[in-house]
Length: 407
Image (cartoon, rainbow, N blue to C red; front, side, top):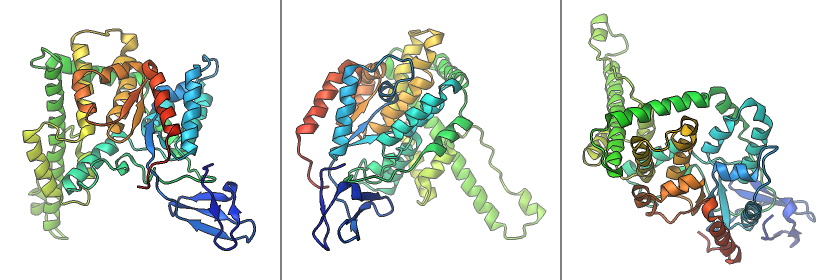
């Protein structure tokens, strides 16, 4: 419960925190006066909180499976201080869609532990799960093409309405259990996914035309992304032209007119639907043309989450090209699904949060030059087991600071 207090405007009675509940419909709260029995609507202020993204490895260590080693004492201290700062309205804990994917992939024998971890994650996030990487990709491009530069990285990009809103009293929490079931119903097995990743990266290793260093890998990866995006743009434009032609035929076209329709036949246009999400509600033809022109001069454009992602993918490609980390048993951790989830959360959230946790291997990867060149443009601090002491020191500093000024 927050240390903020509320006075009843009708009788002057102090409304206890236990009688204040959040109201997600209005974005405020309601307090119930025990003396005059009235409900008092509240419009809660906004305070500049720090956004903290906690990755799956950190959360799993805080909520270990049965029989796993007891958490390191520093993790217990970090957990306490994070919860304390949350109550004090100094931080907002970000839990993402990536966590949902990873926990839903647990084997059946760990179903109990999975549900326990899911509830733990849901509680930390106050029932609000942040966006996934594809959502962030769409949001960044939509703002770029809409010309909205008022806030270069609004938190709405990561699916959060107002994380800076003060939390006070009891919070009404939504549930994400439907999403968990959705992932379990449609998720491929880890082996299936990793086999696809293995095919992709080995094909890249085989087909890269020139590779003397990581920058060569970066140029190649970005060229592949440009080709996929451009193919999606072309497919989208062809679909628009086809639908327009069909409309022009009138309500009752004859066989000759139908035969004149040019039905698009584009295969593997992976980005067509995402392109549609970007252009929805905008002048679609103009945006597609502008996007194509942009790709001619810059392989992927200025959107940071794609730039960070391609830098990380280039480092993995160089590692594979050099035949480093060849163990098939470690493929998942080094290149496969687990590593791709790490890439998702780092590339999606670094531009938006003040601090982010990851595992030690990913932390080291973020320090490599082509990745660091992209990440260092943002003030986000990255923490892992290698510097949890620095994470604790950062949290201690927040505990002693007064709340920031109202946004």
